[in-house]
Image (cartoon, rainbow, N blue to C red):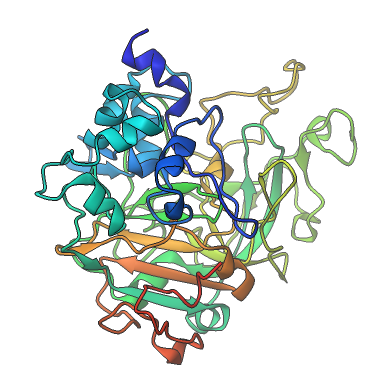
Length: 426
């Protein structure tokens, strides 16, 4: 069997857990994280317990904007390999991932390549792993310091100014709905954190291991139909705005009128009195926001259910409007597509890019000489404490030179010098 077929079920490598108090999201068919943790069980819950251990990010050229769009490992795998597995998964592997496969793709293979320097940065794989550095990324080695970071509480986000918008959340499978969200515009948040001129986008992480990339500026959708939702929408001085939305209603789609066959939830109080086909007026326009309220109430905190899937969406959700305004279409899982709005993969299913229970925002790219923070790029304690960390290409951190959180955020500093250790001691 060739490399592409052998790796088909590990397109996104996410971690397993060795503790009862923390659990990681398992990508469908994932089998390689367990092999890594057999060799290095102490790395469960660190940043190495993630798909980025073996998979790499990538980029493509947006000719309309005359710029290169950079994607993280999760989005690059979806882009290059595809949801339909039509691409070559080998294109998503970093040097460590390739060495691991060629050595046998099991726990013994991890040990067999310990002494190698897969990424050619002058450090053995085993030394990089010991230091919680990616052995397949030459830009991440034991000489790097944690990137500057800023922790925000709910109160601090609210103090930055609120934006409220009513919009369609169009899903592919789980049911569409209209809702009104309130939160902080992402641009306002990044400006407060001191986003650097060199920044190109953000990657948003949830505690179940999910991550989603957003370029700062609008880009063309890819030929494969992937949609990348930008940060700077409807902001003064920018050359692109998220378009005004239209309210689409049809009795056939209404889950209240047709509880067995409907697919769109119109029950939100903010939807009352709206006329089908009417323009949706939003003061200040539609924006990418970090939401903390839905219909005026705090978002329900995210938890892992019995199927190890994320339920809930709070305390914070990254909410992006549709780039191409369209109606709520039937679920892709439904056998009944002879309806007013049948499922159409070409429509704008923005809800899938609205990361639920967002705990961390990484501003890309990391500054020279810095590395990722030492966690699974997400933290359940952030959900419990209603906090989010913004790190990477920012100039206004509230961490000291060891990477510990400064106490004025309301969080105790870690005495051990481990970045955000007090927050993330599961």
